[in-house]
Amino acid sequence: MILLKQLLKRLDEIAPLAIAEEWDNVGLLLGDPESEIHKVMTCLTITQATVSEAIAKDVDCIVVHHPIPFKPVSQITTSTSTGRFLWQLASNKVAVYSPHTAWDNARFGINQKLAEFFQLENIRPMIPLKSEIVNRISSIVSEEDLRHLGTGRIGTVTKGDTVSVIISSIHAMIHNPIIERNQSLLTKVNRIAFVCGSGGSFANAAKKAGADLLVTGEATYHQFLEATNLGLGLVTFGHYQSEAGSMSLLSEMLGESFPELQIWRSHDERDAYCTEI
Ligand SMILES: [Zn+2]
Image 1 (cartoon, rainbow, N blue to C red):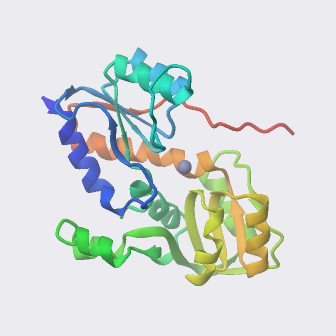
Image 2: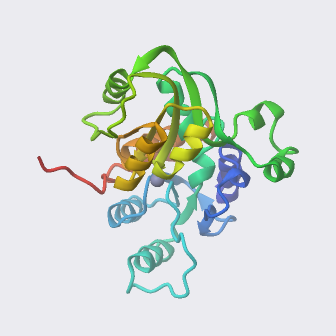
C-alpha cells in the first residue's frame, strides 16, 4: 500500500521544494497526505481536459507543473475556472501537487535536460542558489547536487555553432516547433543559457552569466528588443514545448520508484496555442 505522503517524499528528493523561486507556490496544494494512492497522472497544466481525464481514470494524484491555485484564493466556487477545477478535483478526491520551479531547477530537471540535449559542456546553473537557501538545504542535499542547483542552465557549445545549427537542434527535439528569434547579428554561438517556460525576462541574467544566446519557451516583443539591445541572441520555441516533455520524464522517474503505482503523463492535454498560417 502506497500513501500519498510517500510519493510526496520522493518528489521532494527529485525536485527539492526548498529550491523553488520565492514567488512560487509549490508542493501539495490539494489533498490528504495520509490517503492511499494507486494512480498518478502528470501534466503541464490543470485544464478542463486534464481534470476530466483524471476523474474518468480514477486518478488519486495529479502532479502538475503549473501550480493551481497559484495566487491566494478567498473562495473556491464554480464561478471561476480555478474554483471549478479545484471543486471537481476535491469532490473526486484527486490530490494536486506542483513542483514548478523546483523541477525547472532540479539536478535532473527541465533546464538541465535541455542543456544536455544540446550536448553543452560545463553545464552549470545560470543563477546559482542564494547562500541562505544553500544553508537551509545543505543537510539534506549532497555537496555534488548543490553545485548543480539553481535557476536556468548555461553551458559551452562544443564546436562553436551558429544560431541556425541551434535552431535545427530544436527541430530535432520537437515536432513542428514554432520558433522565433530576435534580429541579432549573432553569427557564432559559444555559450547558451536555457530557461524553460516564460524566460524572456532573464536576458540580463543570461548576459551577465556570459551567454551569447538565451533559449527559452516564450518572450514578449519588448524582451526580444531588450535582448538585441544587450547584444544577446534570443530564441523561443514555445512555452508548452519547452516543458511538456519533462512531465513524461517525471512520470518515468516516479514509475521507477513506485512500480506498484500506475503513473502516466496525461494523454488528453494539448498546447494552449495553435498556429494559423
Ligand atoms: Zn511553464
